[in-house]
Image (cartoon, rainbow, N blue to C red):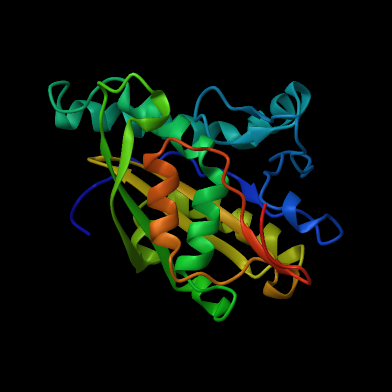
Amino acid sequence: MATAYAQPAAANYYTMPSHAPPKQRGYRLCDQCGSVEQPPTRFRLCGGCMTTQYCSQDCQKLHWPSHKVICQHTASQISGAKHSVGPAVVDESLVKNLRKFVSAHSTLLGWAGFQALQLKRVPANVRQSALLVELDYRPSSSDSLRRFSIRNTHIVPRTYITDNDPLVGADIQRREDRCRRGGGIGTAIILVQCGDISQVMPVEVDSPSRISWDSREDWADVLRHFVESGRTDFKPISTTTRGIVYG
């Protein structure tokens, strides 16, 4: 694509191990030790890219030598995007609020990507396509959770993201390799875009046989509802012996 996008370092999101209850799925991995986020504990975010998660300060320090390059690359891209479009066009709070948006809605966005790419039925789609979520920004809203609304969603070629920036592509490939070593099908990619600023969110996906989520054709409506109502309590829907359970 001709348009250049600022692409921050990829967020790290993973489903829970197969022995965990289905309603626990959807929390994140520590990028250093691989431990899974368990409520009520919340992982700490890297202060530079605001996307990579760690279970402790010790893990963050240990990971810094390998994370430094992509983190600093992210910061330089964001700075370049601001200068290229001018301060009159990009609100200074947009980048910060977009990062917070992706973090707050990580479970919802990961689920939407899983549904949009139809990974339960066609796992091979994870290697071919990605979900692009376009947002509108309302900086004047007093509610920080309602400053973004969904403009549109698209299925785009995976190469639209991985080939546009070699460092981001390499970071995604690292996660892809880790996911497959653990028995997953690979890394689904969600690109969240607002104007000329965007954020890449890879989702490391378990084998479909280990995922109890229902396939949903109305995923775009669900995504829009939760985002525009400012709700961050989304939990995936699973079919159990009791029928449909809304977690």
